[in-house]
Length: 130
View 1 (cartoon, rainbow, N blue to C red):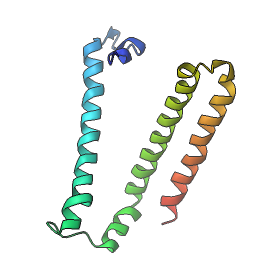
View 2: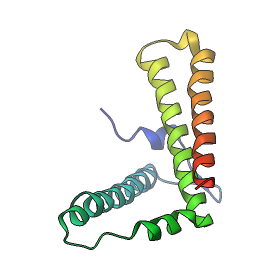
View 3: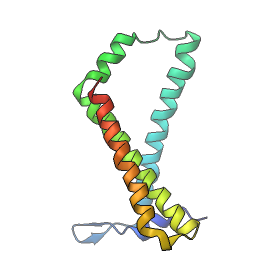
């Protein structure tokens, strides 16, 4: 399996010059490293350190105040929407190319991206009503 397909599929230009494939690939790996580090830290905090009592758990009213902040709501909604459309894209191409169902391209696209739109509406509505 090749992990370097993205630089070949997505040619990036900056000021008329092509960015080397290694730089694009390094950017992808760096982004996944940051995301993985944040998720690992949150899992360590809320899954180990707070339940065991090594750290004082945050006050629920403080967490609710953080979530009610408009900037936090925008960031959370953006993360949910991006995640849902990422899932829809991966799911669509898994069905079309992995399971060889490309003859149902239009129906698969409508169902997968339609689900992402409905989930995005819910993901925007829920934080807005907290």
